[in-house]
Length: 509
Image 1 (tube, rainbow, N blue to C red):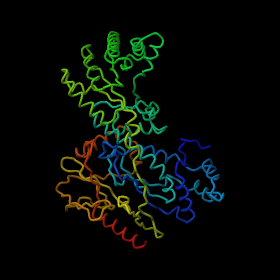
Image 2: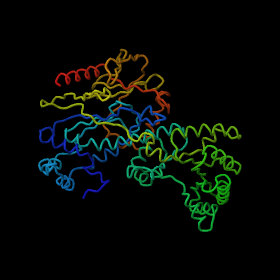
Image 3: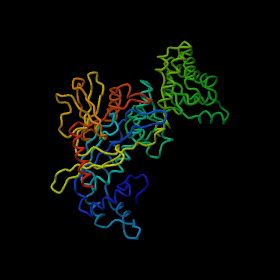
Image 4: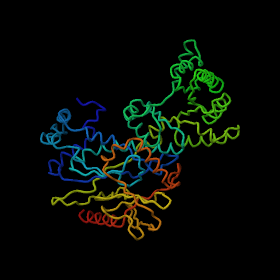
């Protein structure tokens, strides 16, 4: 029995299996082919835009490829499907082939590692293998990589705004079904320190984080108690992890005074409180006033957790307001900002403003009958849809200050630097190029490798890659609003190949 959410081998689109049968019938199923995964535009959130993306979703994809195959349950389900004429959609020979030969482990992957900064038109991953097998995995591959990359990118932008402050992912209740697990993982790669998602935390080997609900205070009020009794109950159960949610009744006249009373009691009992949480209202103003009360009560190191529809722009605005208000009331603004913790939920897990990444999976090469590779290309009236054909290498060039300058797509084994200046060509517009002076480039880094060799590196390394790569971008590319466009370019040899393939396809057409 196939269940929704099982992510079996049927976790694909109808047309992938239909194409697989066509290849099988035409003798092309075992013909080796290459497909590339890339995206064409960075996320545009409406009022603000991303100047880069963060690669994520690779490990869950590899796990799916390694553990998924066609078996009796899958073929039994496919056997029941019918054409418009009432005939079986899939014949028995093809179903037998799916079980015996559609082996996802036959696919050779070359990929940019999780956590790396990636850009439009950059070939993030190449998949080489039997044509029908590679075709069938397209949908699952796009599903795993597109959403995770979208969330990791949003998290990296939140991390930029939050600077060195702790960021917690709080979005599970507002996300799309079980996808929140991979969303939480992607958020951790992008720069979040922890997630409230317990299942994801357990699987990923991290500690979940959270506070308490408004319902704790409401329950005590409804049963004849009060906010102070609710706070005391929480402190009794969690004396060393005590973060109190202070905005259920009145933040400054009730929540904060009651929290400070409990904090004093905790300290007298030998425990140090962690802090308070603000979930509504003017978070910047309330945060400053909460800090004043905590400082006056002798808790200058207590954290102030801010939550409630936060994203990169609201955090940026809150920090700017807090900096000014802290100075006005006599607080050290640097110390004030350092004690903040951000709980980011709905707007992170849903990538508020840009709900999908337009990643695509395109055929770029096919092995001919003689065993030689022929580049493949899609032509379109829209030039932006023209991919980069054939096998390739991908390089990132850095200047002498360590700033990433350009990503170059080259033919295999091509030296991206050499001794001469570099002519870099637009990835799809003909006649558009620029010269990069060789003297301006300090080093070239190969970006892609076998992702199965990266699997033991862990989540922390992926997060560090994201932090390092974002730091290596020009400030204009990192800008939260109207960022500069980072250039992905072709070497002269790769541009000549693209032109040759385009001309050949047009002449045959």
